[in-house]
Image (cartoon, rainbow, N blue to C red; front, side, top):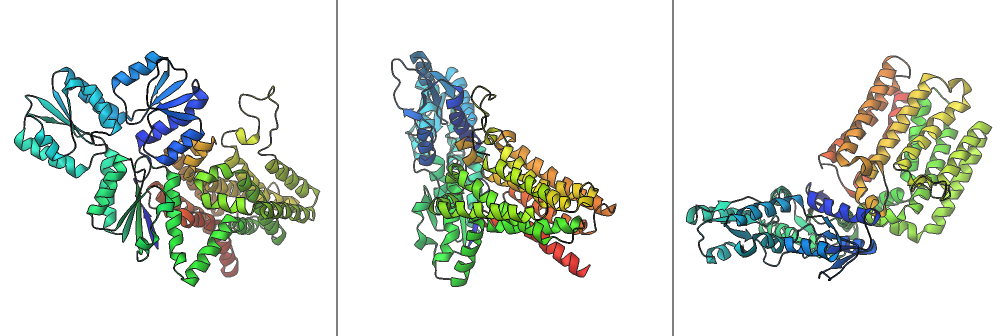
Length: 577
């Protein structure tokens, strides 16, 4: 089954801004923290905020203490004034697009215009907009509602930002014919327009559509309406547990879109649940390969094999013939450390990868034993190549084990940095450096005459840069979950666009490094071939930027596969050239 996730699915700018303000509030503003009404229309996000200690209030008390967030939909101006009057610190998380509509209404209401708002009477955004119009405000839910209103001497027409585009087009056409003196403002959010347009286009290439979002979400309901109107079988769900498998049995291609208040982790869960559906149909071969693929990824066996392939490629790059022990050490070290990292990162996996969280909780003890066993065997193998290799690997292993341990007492810590994991971006950097040392430096130490030659430096930079790109890319995919649990990864620090630009520049630099080094014979000609592996990763990042990359397990498998590709390229190069 092919899965296509809409490019526009998930948080819009306004919702992302509101959720980030809410998540940052407990550390920046006076507690307790509240939101006036539900911050957004998504039950999973609201449950999360509740866990973070952010409660919802529906009424304004006479006196209050703490901080109140204004919901993304906005509120009438009187509500904001009364919250401040009660003693609350007010953080306005109103979507900037809604603020723009509020400003239009406020300006024209002041000048005596009737303000006609096209939208749902009971929707929070419409209630807030009506507050800015005051006695000049009128709400119409559809064209018939507009026709029922009296003809005003002067009036403006605005739309709820999540309104159906087709409905508002009909409204404007009617007004142009019957009330040409009315001013019509196209206030439907660009994100809403793009989502609805993409759903129509997506419907042309899929056998079924899934619309993910809260049942109270207006824009999710509009998406479901547009999808159903296209004639394609449509499911509207809040989460993966509501998927009707019978409705998707005959579907070869499934499209997934989501409302503007639906977080990425919910979309990912739905995609992974759909991804598993074909394997419940009794297709033995497909089910077998999917299970093997998933197990190898969950247990880190696949990434460990990739590390071994990368080690083999680097050994050839550095002219080291006795590569097998180094390949074995690389496999054992990566399998050990990555398993331990996953065991300590389950809080984020709850949102980023629930399958991994479930797997590690279920098999926690045997996975710990496997990690410790592989780490011990790796140390023994390294000891056979000298004390220096053993000591370096031991130190690196201890650093990995102490990553989550409190190392600095409160009195000596600078701010909030008590552990290595508290340092922003430390995990991505340390993983990359650790791979670089194990895969290139340790083999070079075993060949003492190779330690300080340029080929070792090139190999180290290539491996470290490649692994950094791989880990940062996964951090990019996991931004929502990491933000929720308080992780400060590099993509969170830089933002999505800057992180993608950084990855593209890094990968392009690594390609240049290999090509130039091979051209000037600093490394063997295999460098030309290995640069193709980095080019493939660069293409994958570019596809993700354009939202053309696959999702779920397929994407993870492709990312990890470019390490194996490096090993395959090296084998072919060694045999035929």
